[in-house]
Image 1 (tube, rainbow over the protein chains, first blue to last red):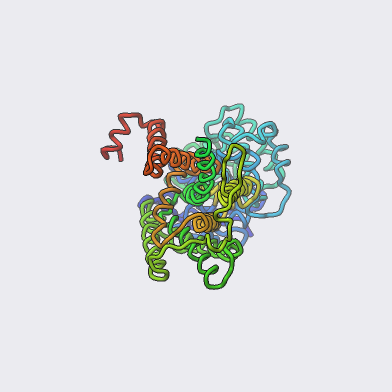
Image 2: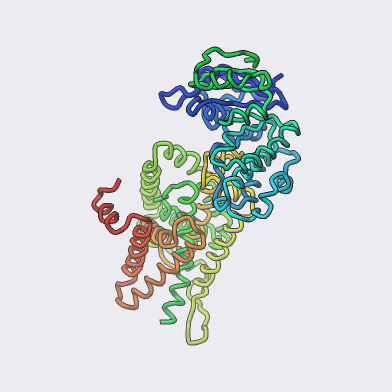
Length: 242
Length: 298
């Protein structure tokens, strides 16, 4: 049984259909890269899985349970954690307080404030600093750490490299590599195609709310994904079970 | 003058107490509760009823009334404010305005227009005082109210910063959407915050009844004091509320020294000065303020 199954999912923003009948599944321990141009529906899809957007139709099945109508905080309790685009930290709170908030769901596991600080050593001296006073890289590390504190079975990462310098992105991805190696199941939304393909097992390229291409990251050629990215490749390549 | 300042500071404790719940609800749920004063008067009437009919002293009656106020706050949020908030920012204000009218008139219908007080039920505490150096006489009740305000504000501060539930409430107040995404049950956090706010209102109502008289329509004046103290102190800041309460009370007592009718006017003037300074320093500037006052700024 797949850890996550998205079945014919449709999500609307008012009259706009942002996600149009998307289906895919993710197995335990896999890393799925979700790529696509701005406005392709990646963030909406991720937020719909996390419960921040209600689906107009279709289903999200997580660990065998249908998540339709389940609010976002309950989904965290079930093991789905989102690192939202733009970090969305609680800027009036300290790094430690932000991390402790991740424990609200009450899921048991190995993640603690100390372990997050070991995973992201740049946060150690900033533990008691207000999140609003952190650099972009430190904020991203805090956002990822906060999600990890809920001991998730599925980690959803939305544009973790957005607005960060290449050096900081390298550091964030080095930490992510550790998570991937430890067997954490991850869905990663990323604009940087090379990076997305290098860290993932599977790739889905979205275009105008639909899956334009789906396949194994190792087999997908950069050319093929680029064509799908810009809408030059209209047919899905297959490879990822619906 | 020293006497006025000391009395003003002590009175500020009461204003901080009554402003605390208003400020708390605004900072967490972004709701201006216009029924705030009426709910304080409701609490005072509940204590009066317990004392006059069942001979339960007001301080003991708090053990019954405060949990009741917490339940009222929770139910208000769950069944009234949460639903009205879905209709936009204006609807909860109108809802609480309507609620205030209902509470006032139900109290009037039940208790009539007579003024009441809890003072007869607390013995000589209502008028007893200590003599401080310099021939200063400070009321024991005023000191108790001030200490209660400091303890309450300090306790709330500790609760919000040191406990998981407090952090959840702060997260909800800062960004409810993201709070849900990190596992906070936003509806529950809001309902608990409303319950806490109502407990502070209940306590303020008790002290209102002990230090003065009240009638079914006394809520509007209490709301005004609470609103002025909260705005002066910066709505949402707990210790700011204490400072706001003290500034308001000092302005009132100093106003009363200048003119017999200057008590209320002194407070209003302080409130308006702070309000204008806040608006002016908020980036609107003088021209923006003038446009704002003529309704040209949306």
